[in-house]
Length: 140
Image (cartoon, helix red, strand yellow):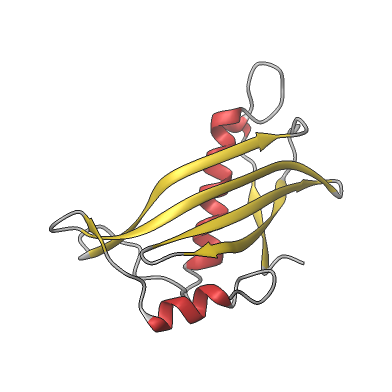
């Protein structure tokens, strides 16, 4: 069971010449899901998401597996979980759901960095607890 499922609108411009969501647009859908899941204004999980902040969260790695073409729909549901937590990084798992089927499975590795030095910053205990709460099952 995913920790959080969010609805992300599909834009007309996300479609390619074949009439389905372009593979590059899928990464944009994942980004929107990540922002909704981790920076909810009522309970943000991570540091402020804004230009000029001293700590930023950046994508270090992304893997996407396309299982089914996504035609134009008003929105897709995206299940978001935290699959692994490291020292300064964590892995987010995504499933884009289409009519009850998984159309796309993906992961992104995110890293907290100090903007002044561009070096990784270790996750603090509070951040770890908030990330763990988004895990599909208890993490060791």
